Length: 633
Image (cartoon, rainbow, N blue to C red):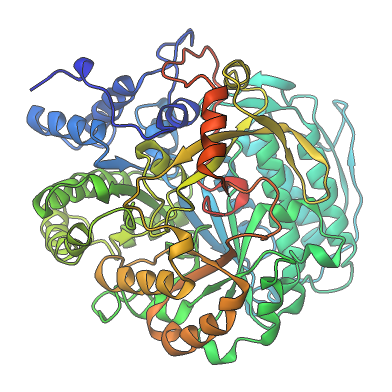
């Protein structure tokens, strides 16, 4: 068998830059050189045995290397970034979790837990339906003062825990004691200082102080009254903006609210004006257990005048696994992860993995890849957690999400293998769980948007059609990253991120890459919204026992047909779905933009392709869900 040094990973068109930007870690403590892909693979495989106690044989290790290099399967991005580091030893399972969910049913814990999860790089979903939010006590008017001296009431420790504690004290003042306090940031490290463990550079205390002031303003405006779901949305979104400025620049959120809550429904209608920039932090969806009850107002944001909301079918998510199967109910589900492929219980987290379906050569190979990824995920779920309520629910459910991506680039034969592979995986889970004395996994499979991992292999994301034969793919990168001057030198277009209000975020830049898909790809222009919904329905039946995350591209004239289809099939077949206008959607700097072949060639002629990058810095972004919403958006 050839040595890995003699092989090249089967990266897609921008796979290498995606890998270096997102997953390559320093090779040594001096941090003078970043990993190459073979180094990252060795770190992952070694950590499977040392940290996860998998005990892979030498032959299994070699097979795992081969499937990684051939881009047949992949651990989650969280694993590529964290596995094998001391952070996993310290934090356990939460350091490897992509997804998290919480219900806002008390005044302090849900927000503090969510902030901690976001700071650890996990996307967070939160349920802000009125039946939960109205359990919170009335807000009180208090004054919270920043006093950067040593005699302040609370001196913030320079740690993740310290930032969370300031939030807790703020919420305690507004909801419990009614007494203000002063706090000091004298111990918080200054802007630009490297952050150990998760990487990135410190933002200094300013974003934290601003966010606490904004949260306090939200609650003071509700003094003497009950807070509303819209207020909880703003608090969570402000927390997201603090985290984005302060650490690994991941702040993916999904807010789940009532479908008749018009304040929530209009929260991202930018045509109505006065939308705070922080509301860009969440992908908002409505709980809709019966499509017949969906109000007409839901569709008002579908004309390109706002961000279309998604739909969450909690009733179906709680009752079945795959469509037609009642053996695997999920009664504890209260929400979803930010991209809505994972139904989750309160305080639950979930780990993911990915199978690149177009690269799989046989059903036997598909089963082999799925089993490897299953074993890695299963062992990670058995780790300890610093949040006991999270450890308990994760160890009870052992939920994972082994996804498939490139579905609409795969052949019909490759798609046909999924149904029986799932059945084989279920049998394997029973046997393996019994052998290890662990609970069987409540859920095993999923289909996620796969924004970043699909770029590694150059396949279409999840169940989504190819955006176009030729297109621009935009990726967000920290402005301080040493990738920026490299990209500029190679003539890749760069610009600052634009906020809702038209201002620029100078902490983040958007890089544009010309891309193309193979001619055998199913493209959005040839795939009606109804056809996309049928693919979702099929995958929910044949593969995913969690959910299928899909942002359905639609044209305005398709809306009547979409409504008709949903009335017929939604209640019993769809756990989650969202929509986006293929064009004229109103999003600045959208991740995808269609271009002509001529425009593609012109862009390619101007740039010098990146084939080898030697970085000497640690400020690499980790974003599975870009901009606080699904990558496909």
